[in-house]
Image 1 (cartoon, rainbow, N blue to C red):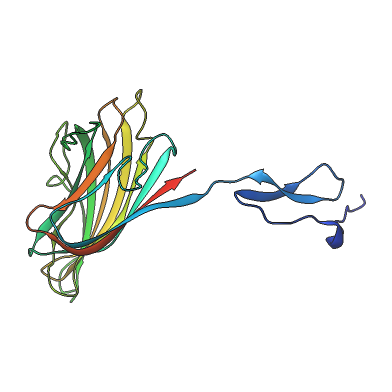
Image 2: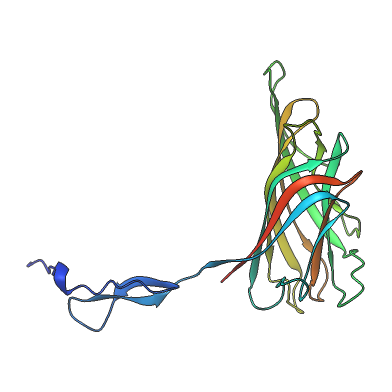
Length: 221
């Protein structure tokens, strides 16, 4: 069987936004013809002794509607003003009042290891952080250290918040520097049990201000 060879000089590989390389109508041609996805930066909030940080659709250039089916929040060095505080979030299904009290059901797995490795690392189901049909703020990570070199970082992936048919799923993963010098990993998943669209998300520590930290919002197409 003869091999079909592509002539390098005949390839059309001109780059194009949101495209991937694929075969076109020519027998030996490639072109940037296939549509691909993209991650689009939307908004960055930087804390400076703030009680809360909120992303509200339609406010201050925030987009959290049917423009994208998926949204990604990233968290860099969220540093609490209070030792041992819990980093938390909640959603709003309001168009204006934004009471941040959407009903949620979640589950969490936690792992931890001490800096000295003198204690046995553990993996366990975290009943202290899961909730069942609660409107309370959801814990993303807890016992966060407030020393100058401590804090927590991670991400939250929110799916189709504008749906008025289905619940709105989310997945989060955080690493926290515990005030007792543990590395803690928190893996949470759950859903807003609400068929109204989610129009805003708010983040805060359970006690005291968000001393410093960056939260970025991206849309995924």
